[in-house]
Amino acid sequence: MSSQINLLQTILASTRTVFTVQSLMMLTNIDDSSRLTKSLHYYTNEGKISNPRRGIYTKRIYDVKEMACSLFRPSYISLEYVLQRAGVVFQWDDAVTCVSYLSRTVEVNGKQYQYRKISPELWIGMEGIEQQDNIAMATPERAFLDMVHLSAGNCYFDNLRPLSVKRVREILPLYRSKRLNERVASLLNINI
Image (cartoon, rainbow, N blue to C red; front, side, top):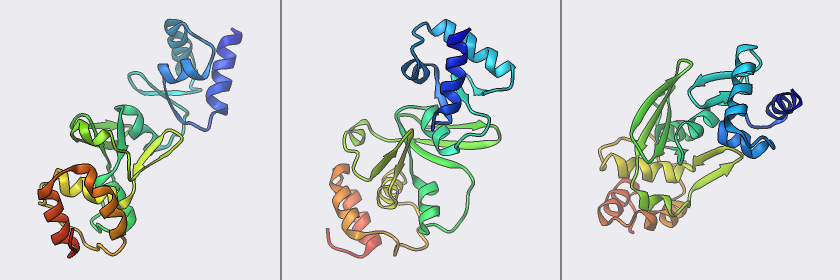
């Protein structure tokens, strides 16, 4: 029973709000995944924690950005979600948009999470992706490049002034695409 109490205390004391069995095994000294899962089910039934999706456990109130980065790993928040908050795209959408190794749309507790597949080579360079605790989020410049790359240039931006051309130029070589270079040069009206 003391390991159960330690588990709940660990969850509630953590700055994280979204957990997997694997992440909890690393946070606690419980190495038996079936015992850990039974304890998690117990706390879920007691209403102490939530289990909004198979394999995902949360505090009762959790961070949607942390959920987005936990549903599929590796992934990072990018595209419209970042560009809307940076003032580059004005049309508002409540979905959390991410880049990952697959394309998928998932709904958890009424919130939509959209994932777009990006080539594995782009995972090597993490330039323009900020990591804070359990959340990985693209800078506006990386989100802009992801958007242009994934949409093959068939996208619209309302306001490109918030973007740092210097940062775009620093991140652009990661994509290794002459066509992307041409699209970005045309959109930003710069020489690359």
